[in-house]
Image (cartoon, rainbow, N blue to C red; front, side, top):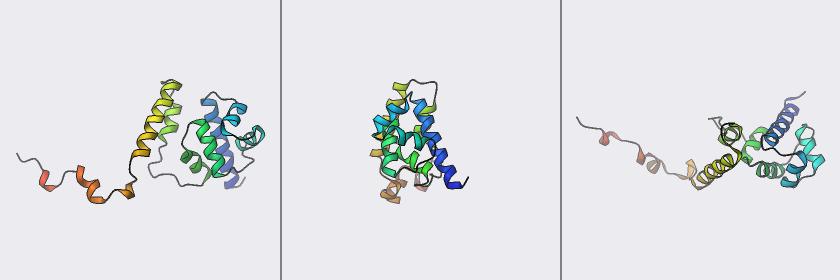
Length: 138
């Protein structure tokens, strides 16, 4: 099996796992995502290569970030920190599904409101950091 084929199989397994975590049937997820039942089944089995748009629809229906699926599909590179907080929240068995949805919504709203690192000038980013003049004098 080629690396590309393995990537699509892994993506399909991840989508299936997220569907099970969300207690969704294949039919229900296909309806929510706006894709056909057979096509979603083929994606889950790694037989089809979905477009970025289809991955976004599936991510919305699963209430996970599109970025997560894009990384797994090889469309985006993984962040250096390597942590997908949304996936970790969804995996946590100690909180209920309503709590997970609320926590994810809050987290994603904060992320959407936060300026991107490139948009923040270095002098503004450093304002909160103590400088040599801010040292405590004993």
